[in-house]
Amino acid sequence: MSVPTASTVQLGDCPAVIIVDDAAAVRGMLRALLADEGYRVVGDLASGGHLLDAVAQLQPDIVCLDYNLPDSNGIDLLKAIHAAHPAVAVVMITGSTDPDLESAAAEAGAAGFIRKPFSPDKILKELRQVVQAQHLLSAAQQADQPLTVATPRATAVIADDSATMRLLLRAILGRAGVAVVGEAWDGRQAANLVAEHRPDLVCLDIDMPVMNGLEALQAIRAAQPGVKVLMVTGSTNREAIMQAGKAGARGYILKPFHPDKVIEAIGKLLG
Image (cartoon, rainbow, N blue to C red; front, side, top):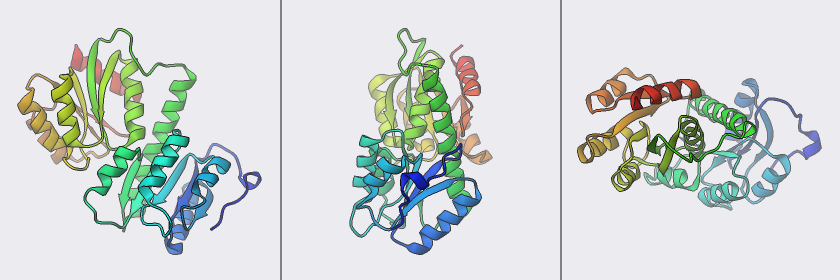
């Protein structure tokens, strides 16, 4: 395990990251990759036993957390970090093929989920989205922008498997005068929340576990044809966007979010 003391950490504008993986090769690869991209790797651990202490001491912005650790369960560690340090974004990294794991990680508060083997581009894209969301949330908090709306112009259900993205989207919708009445981390839960709350608007991520956004869109539109749905995606995949339009989506929002563009899209949609 390599955990520098707080006094050795170079403070600055670059996001601070702790890497947790029992494979030295993975830790070394991630350390080199992230350093080249301007991240500050403030610690790397081969197990989870000292992780909470390291997070408290080093105060990272992001933890890249392996699920299969020799002494700890990655989901339990994720829950503990999320409870004690909610501002820290945890990106779960795993070689497990368990189909339920991604949903469990999203429910526990993961900001991202990546399966091994992964490409450098994939993890860097995931981290860029997390960092951008953290910066926007920080700006909103400094401006004392409320997450709740006293007199909303509309109600919404938001669905994204990233807890950080849901929090950011909630803040943006609040600025647009829209009250979030339900948050989902998978497509099936999104469909259930829409049936329960009957919102005016649904913001639906395309890539989600259990039931993806396109499948959830079809279920939602079949049960509630009048609801306005905006798809949320980190990809400009034309085919997926066209499929969503044919299934009844009224538009889409690209990650990383630009608050003013999201607010403009919602304003046009709501009239």
